[in-house]
Length: 145
Image 1 (tube, helix red, strand yellow):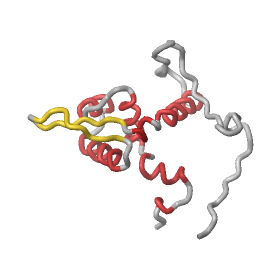
Image 2 (cartoon, helix red, strand yellow; image 1 turned 30 degrees about the vertical axis):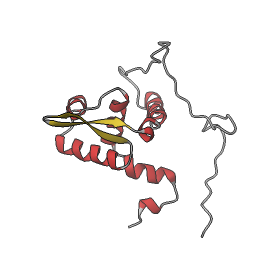
Image 3 (cartoon, helix red, strand yellow; image 1 turned 90 degrees about the horizontal axis):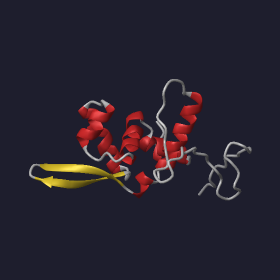
């Protein structure tokens, strides 16, 4: 079996560390201010054993960090790291895609906290300014060693 970490594709490497539904929902909830095990468990309806594993993985992968918030009894909370905070645009792109192709019924809306306007995510190539998906792409394999 191929080792994903040796895969030259950054999408494959990323999905290997966070491509699980529960992990992505934990990151969503962390961006919404949840930090504690019981908060995640209650909001997601996730089994404690699964949550423990996903939090450990997200911590090992550097998206969350544990911090002690109570010494007696010892209790830890999970805070977003820079990598975890940088995942927010990815969450919004997934949400935008889901609204378009998995919509129907009542859906939550994401609003800018300062302006109150709805956030409509769009991915743009920083170099050309073109909306991603409007121009052909080419995947180039890395040069051999």
